[in-house]
Amino acid sequence: MDLLGDFASGIMTPLYYGITALLLAGHWVSSLILPAGSGWTWVLAIVGLTIAVRVLLLPLSFQAVKGKRAMLALQPRIRELQKEYGHARERLTQEQMKLWKETGTNPFKSCLPLLLELPIFFALYRTIEVASRFGADGGARGFMAPADAESLRQAIFAGAKVGDTLMTFEPISINDSLNAIILALVLIVGICGTQFYAQWKLLHSELPPGADEGPYAQEQKFVLYVMPVAFAVGGLALPFGVLVHWLTWFVWTMAEQAYIIRDEPRPGSSGGMGA
Image (cartoon, rainbow, N blue to C red; front, side):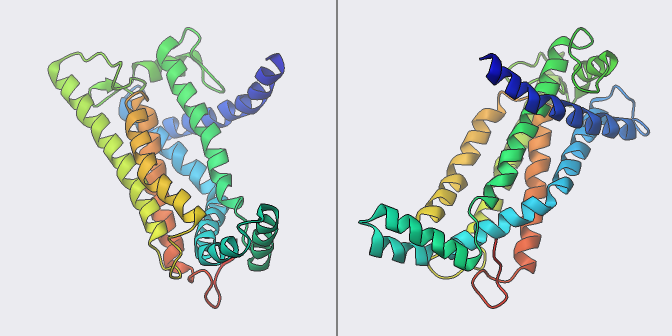
């Protein structure tokens, strides 16, 4: 367990420093026009942090979207291989790998942004959650000073603290309670809607006939219908600041993907993409 803990710490500690550096930079910029302790100041800092991370991930994100479209475009040929070699799993695997190599398609590239997104999300979640629980008394992580943690702990945004969740916030008044509930629902609906639309657009972009069938297409359809439900349920227990991060993340994903699909030729066509 100590080895596992050391490994996790070795990954997360640098992330805490990176996340808090971007968060504090955004907070400093926002505080030039808004009060430093305002919830809006911290929310804008979280939005700025999210955009900065997405800009850094642009090369991987582009490859991921191209890779997903290329994999969907190959589904008719994958089904043909399954019909021919379905009785011989080892041969089927070899033929699929041969097909990926011939077409320049790498199914693993589409997973890279997700593998990076999860630790980033967890680092931000823990930064906000710990600061909200302990404030100046042990709530600072990374580059945050105790005063920064306390400021984040006390920051109020639309009737609730940035670190509160819909399940745990303590409203000061009925209006605050109503505002916080509306805020959480708007954020959760926005997250689910943008995630669903981005995935739907990916599956219904200009692709060869039969691309919406096959094992990879079924996986993407699973993501289309199941992930919004998971986000809706999980969103009830996440801090409002993290919900802002998620919504910003998926709005960016939706816009980025629309740009890539518009400007890239159809996979498999002349000048089509590899991955």
